[in-house]
Image (cartoon, rainbow, N blue to C red; front, side, top):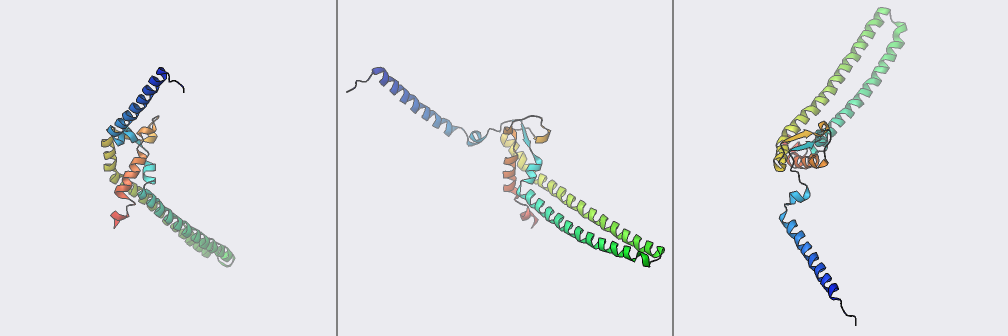
Length: 196
């Protein structure tokens, strides 16, 4: 039978005691530190946000982008259909040129040109209307998001939220974009509920 060394026994007892104390200390710290501090300490006077990402990745922003993309696609389809019609009309006009007097041809050509210009203006108006719709919805979104962002500021002890692109260097710890998206989705969703 092997005889135990008293120093080895003392070391083992001390080591086991320290290990148990470390476990207890870890439990005490874990139970007393608030969850929000364990997850991420946002206590900072300055926060940053990527507004385009905030809008674009929110449920509301995704819905608006999809609606506008569908309208643009429909407008593009309509533009291609009109372009085909106008090309046929132009070929027919060119084919008739030999049979018409210069005055008759000029009148038909001017009428055709006026029609093309009218269609072009209408398409530009529709394109601007889609851009206006996007901007109006961004403004609506940001107005609805203001209290959410103010709540994040209050909870984090921040004094200001800056657009991330105007900050030269920062850590990701102060970026609240993901948190803000999660909170605005809980408040606004895709925005259809408010529209009803």
